[in-house]
Image 1: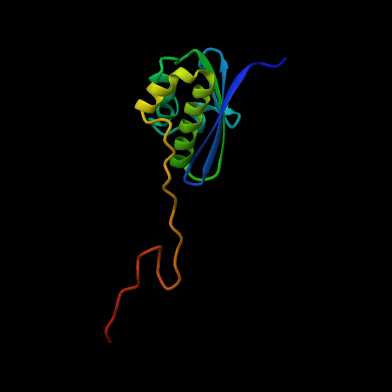
Image 2: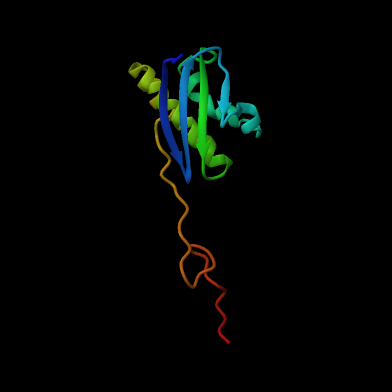
Length: 130
């Protein structure tokens, strides 16, 4: 039994998420766990499902998300972008509301590498004259 689904890939920091939208009642599964169980922080599930809310399709599609890499914040951002891109494949006319809500922009910020002689990427050791 194969079901029709729409897939989108999202990335943020070092996280990658693949979201699949299938017709259903609005169930959210993330890495084979309930969405609210995988993202227990307050507001994280709201951020992941914000693209669906922006286009008025909350509760009409089941969302299955596979995320890997990075931390919680990066995974939430990657999942949000993945859901938005999957919605775009579902219906191209949703581009305008998704763009207006800023759900289709990939956040390009990455962690800067540590340089030799420094404590972090830019923090230098304290200068001592003598």
